[in-house]
Length: 92
Image 1: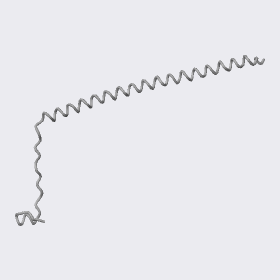
Image 2: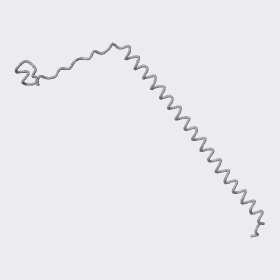
Image 3: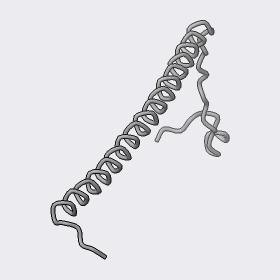
Image 4: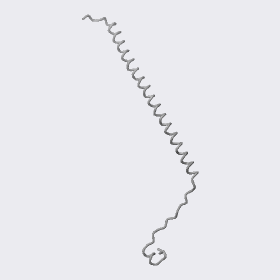
């Protein structure tokens, strides 16, 4: 095997290094593009879900506004044994 001159070896090494660098750079650019696509998909999904939620909340508010007000009933407490026997509430 005959050795190449130093300048030829240096040029070849430099060329190989540039090729490796360019491959890695292109791979990184492809990953960045894919990540941007994924981020765009997530953003679109989020905005769609937000629009659905806001529409549902508006419909719920409209439904509440259209419905007659609910009259609250007063709850009564159970009479104690002493109150039942006497017939009037005890003061206590």
